[in-house]
Image (cartoon, rainbow, N blue to C red):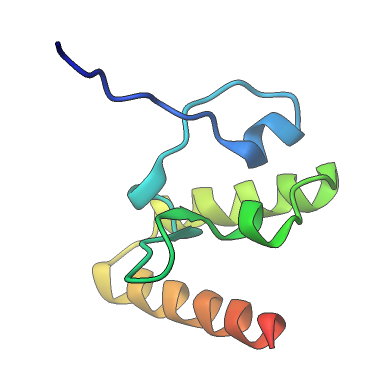
Length: 90
């Protein structure tokens, strides 16, 4: 019996009417998980993906991160974004 990798759809993209696969670990909004939680989309987990304007804004941020000029710039942007996420969760 073989098992196929199931590709999940991007919830942010679906919120704005697009059908695209979730980039998972390649997405800056992906939480890798750990001992207590599995891998997941941060915004799906927070339940914030019902607002189309917010979803579009987040997709634009994701695109900017994908085309960032340098690895150092990308790390800085991801770090700042994750810091903001952590503050909002508190």
